[in-house]
Length: 318
Image (cartoon, rainbow, N blue to C red; front, top):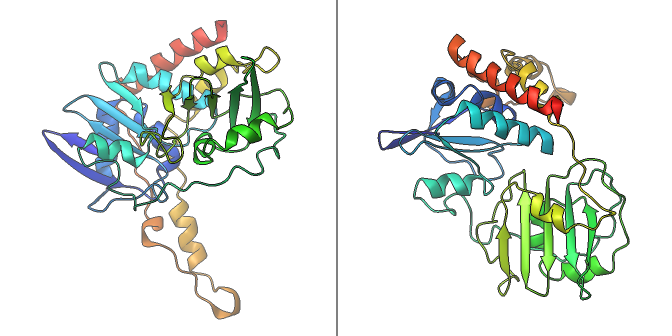
């Protein structure tokens, strides 16, 4: 999505969700050219169908974006590069997904969401988690003032969807293994102050609709993608690991100039074959259209490579 001279327009690419970051890395001019090279659309996608998006607001110099960047390190590496290749811009990860984009345009957060879309559930089964690389970490301040923490295979926002009833399940849960990799987010619950602290490097649709159901008397301490507050609260025997960013930065560099695979051509060949028992495969027409990636100029590419080299030099000396 591009905003310029008071007007905004949407663009769509069926295969771009997993490469939003790649198209943003060369800077605002290259990203804008990339979006405009793809199909202009008039409809909205919701949180289910839109797996990645960006809003480039030239008027206010704001970039909002979300996508599954991979690991915690991949997300932090992307943020670090964007901070250098979008100088003077307010670069924000859109934790509320499409809600952040429509809110920025003055259309509200519920434009693409049906009433009652945020589903709650009972927190049974939380203890069934024994992952050393969990999706999230949830910690709890106990009545004696100490803190316990657990790895969880739930997404961070799912802990809030479970409501305060989660607290009793946490207190009764067995210990989980020490982490070997950074999670995608974390939740800290303090019943004494009735505060929930939250951070994530993935979308957490609904996080700005506080209070969420059943948390009406609680305060939210939203930390964006900053894990350091929870890191300072975790017990000494359950620390966050500190994975290096160098490998993630190299992955970003390795992707420069690599065109996306033409998945549409593969699907077209598959659709031409006969299906089982005479059935005919049907492919969504949009899936047959390849993505038009960013095509940075030599100058834009040079700025990006300098940013990557500088960040790599710092990461390798940490």
